[in-house]
Length: 440
Ligand code: PMP
Image (cartoon, rainbow, N blue to C red; front, top):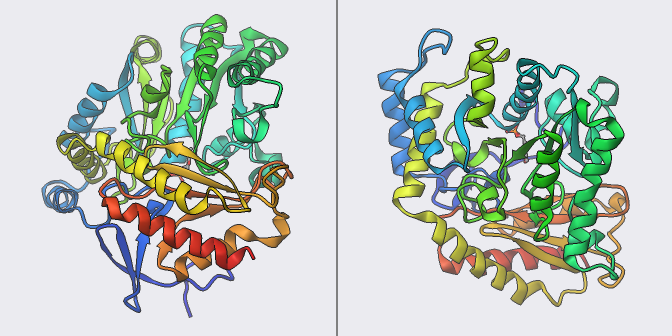
């Protein structure tokens, strides 16, 4: 009997024993093409020689030194490399162990920043509905997925939630995309005014929404308006790039591709590419200076921040991406994957939308294409599709709808950046076979 506490207590999962490029191999020797990189993690595939070597070397050199006492060379080098690529104005990196910790850090940093500059009344956070920012209590409170929050609601801090920017599901026929983007961005201004501008500290959003909506970019103009509103009211803009960052969209920082400048940005997943658990929160020089010149320390921390082995892995991952110039390849393979998906699925009676950026793609499943009506959540389509895809030797990331009757099940694809051109066909073929087998 297994003593592991699994994610799903009743699921019988195969045991993964090895990784080989884009494939994972189970104990029976079955090979699975990892078209979602787990959950947008394994951006360099599963057997990158450089990252493996960097991890081994770092363990031999220095496994751990607490950041209360020391900095370390891999942390310094990774921070330098990240800042050289970071969005304009972003100047400092705070390393953590994953995405939720990065988001928690961002929320607390925003609060401490306003204390430092003498605006203690700024404590309100605004986020978006149907969003996901992590599972620790602060990050869960920021998230706007009603189903994920439900059990823990009494434990969560108050956060306001405005509409996401989800053109496929929400734009009215009478609106142009620009009008729609303006309407939903203006909800931020309305909420700031309702709360009182002097009480609002930050707005958090994903530049391209990952797990909850399925690779959904905002319409053009949306984030420009969001930035304008944040500037008008002195509200910090936190962009959560835990899933869409680190090159996933074909830009190292997704916000650079979307044309929006954050005050704080969070990354994780692809930063360690699965070789080590690592995340980071990056912030502007202005925020850092306020803390450096005020209290002198960020009132936050975890034992493993700036872990030498994790940062060595991150440094090797980022060096590999930059030296192999993988961003143009992500864009090219993304276009090929999009074309293969459209070829197999765009006429399918139950595929409502195919979308995304770079190697971050979403396929929306609907009961009816015209009305965009989702499938009944009770059917458990996402779970069935996951199992059917695994039977086909494909790992993809089907997610249930938001269970509010508005957004249905979707499949998220986030394959390794090192996939071959022919893999686009393989993914599309196996996914369409899996869809055929569960939707009859
Ligand atoms: N933010 C976003 C946008 C995410 O997609 C996730 C994870 N799916 C998180 C935060 C939380 O990251 P982690 O699971 O590493 O804590």
